[in-house]
Structures are given as C-alpha cells and as structure tokens.
Image (cartoon, rainbow, N blue to C red; front, side, top):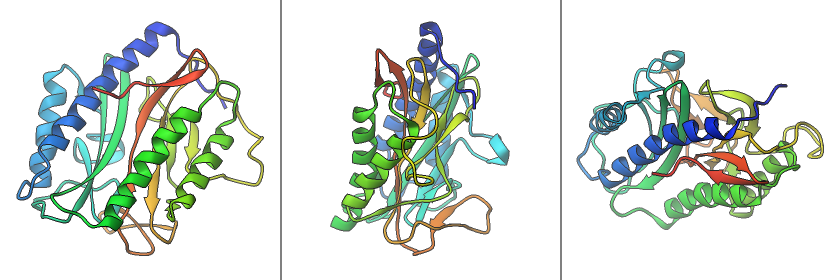
Length: 252
C-alpha cells in the first residue's frame, strides 16, 4: 500500500481546493430552508464552486449525476438531488467534492431543517463529535486501524453504530486514494497496518446508523440506507498531518 506523503506546496494546493468545499457547505447550510428543493441546493453549490475556478469533482465520478450528494432522512450517504422540497423536521446531509488545478477537496455536513427531534439532534451530533474527536486524537506514528477503533468506540458510546462497507480515504491528485479508513476496526488487531505519517492527507467521515450497521443500496444504485430503515447522519473533513498532528483543510 503506497500512501502519498505530500510536500508543503502540495498541501497548500489541497487546502485551496478544500477551502472551496467549506465555502459551498456554508452556503448550503445558510440556505437550508423549508420549501427549498434539493436540486436548487445542488445548483447553488455547483455555481459557487465554478465561480471560484474549481470543478465539482463528484459530477460524473463513477457516473454520479450531480455536484452534491444530498442525503435525506433515511439516506446516509450518496443521495441524488431531486425535486423534493425540504420540510420542517427533515434532516439532510450534504457531501461535496472539488477539483482545483489537479488537486481535490472533499467534506460533508448533516443538519436539521427547522425544528427536529432530540433523537435526530443526537444522531447528527454523534457524526460531528466523532469526527472532531478523531481529528483531535491523530498523532504521527499511530496506526490507521487504531484511529478506526477510536471512532467505533466513540460512536457506540453515544448509543449508535457505524455504517459498514463504506469508509474514509486518502485524497490528493485523485478524489479517492490509499488508505481506506473505516469507522470501525476491520479485523482483530488495531496494532497492524500502516502508520500515520507527516505529509499524509486523508478524509475522515463518520457515517452513523441507529441500530444496524448493514448498508442497503436503493434502486437508483446510489442512495445508501441502513437495514434498520431509520435515519442516519454523516460528517467529513479533509485533514493533513503537519508537525505530528492533524490540521483541517476543508474549512471556509
């Protein structure tokens, strides 16, 4: 497994691509209102990305039709934007990728529409808090499997479970690179596998289910839900390991 080690100038190029992702997510956050359609939000983000000189990297990636993954309620990841208009009590996840001068950005948020239940608040908080906890714990020399185990334990401590078969990933000159970073320990030994090193850039993305980790892909071949049929949540940042710890690149 060859995990790229990025020089400082490359990290800055990745930061520039990711800053546009962060700005697009802030724009969607501000415009998530009752009556707004998912397609309107998708167009808004794509226009923003292109106005900054970048391309929406998800559009056409593996055949995905849009710029933004809009994952509504039971859909945890990879939701396709539709004409559906947001309603009070919905929860929505946005996942956005960019390409700027040959380098890629990627991040995601989940949020409620108007007033949501305490259970949905806790569900969204689990994804966000897992992400920021994991980022704070990253140290040079720890293994990626140790990081996966930390996230799994944190998610379960909140009374939820991680979605299986999908994971975080390296990022750089391609949108998905080595390593794969599940939100749970794959195998028995957390002290095995590659170590985190300075210069590595990767995406962490906790994907949260309520009761069942098993994913089901819906008929459109994209929307991923849990076998429990309940709502899920998702958060993601791109981070770079600099001076032994992780720095978030995907902030506006």
